[in-house]
Image (cartoon, rainbow over all chains, first blue to last red):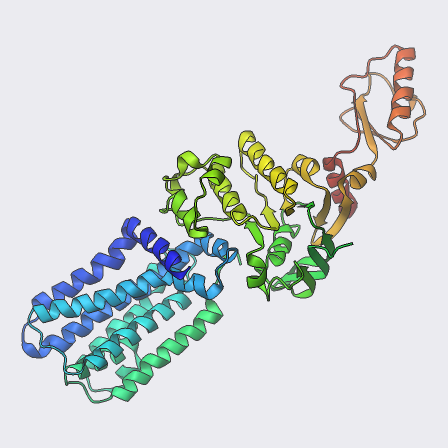
Length: 232
Length: 297
């Protein structure tokens, strides 16, 4: 049932031009652009972190928020609840395309960077942890954010804070040694990415805990804020 | 007697400070169509959504197919079908894709039954309002449910679509399906329902078998009072005579045949024509309005 719901949602995503551009083209275009303008060899971890944060922001976070809000407005979420699938299955099915797409884009963009001249990461496990943790935290934050978003159009505004926490955190970590930057999800992702290539400030545990904290907070807020019905 | 399919006692549902359902008791038995009527805001949809397991009651007891529908939603889902008052599907999916998502298999017969076979490859956003409503009904009955909830299934439908929906509902009743119907169309309830409840401001104002509910209300005789005639000149009738400012006279009587006989005999003797004369037993509309008037008074 999760697969059927996910496929249906994927088709709906592909057929809606605005949503499709946001989810597919935007992060890929920006990621490829970053790889193309990379100047010296030291900058690669920064480029990869930016690429990953873009796909987490656009595809995992914004698409999750927009899809769930639009489906609630369509009264589709409520209709699904009258069917055979449990709440968890419905929710997972609807957010699955955005999550998988973001993971696929992350892998693709790292590949683009490698093709453009980036060295292979010395600790791929840390890169995978950054991707998995960042996408999970972004999707969960998207579920919670949709609870605060009345219409799909408003998602462009309500997703801004988390988006800023992603990109802002990433830029902060790259440009400073201030440990507070790791409290932001983007900071934690950028730290893990830097460490995957042998760089960073060696604050792996802090970065891991931060991403875990964002994921737990996202899940807890989702339980509290998420709404199935546009009316209530 | 077997256990009721739906058993509700002292049910209350609250949204913040507002109590939408205020102590409702009702039972729905196997194989019957139970109609829930009421004005907008009477609490129908809140009540039905509680029965469907979509919201928890704030107080009282609810049993649907023997279980608590909110806590054990998974247990009743396979046995129930639901048409929500407002419902939708991703606008960019086709009819066939939505049907397949709901239940695998070949559903051509069902699509044809609801006149949607020729629309199977059309996207949901291109369907008319009536077609969308029929798709909704189709999904609700795909699994051949024992219990079907229909929340205003014919609102906004043209007469032909409404007739088609009624045919499907009658077919399901003939197969033994239990149906809970909410509707604004009183003639729909009168023609389909076995029993009904009229909700008013969150409470059951009237309930019972349709024939009993109708029999409890007086019949009506109405006509235009001939010009120049005082209402006191009318013959003695068993029913109550109401003279409306428009000049219309309405007699509410439990002895329709006798009063009509007296009235027509009097008019013939006096040589009077009673313009726009109507005589009829109480309709559900009369019951509905009487309920509201009593409550408002």
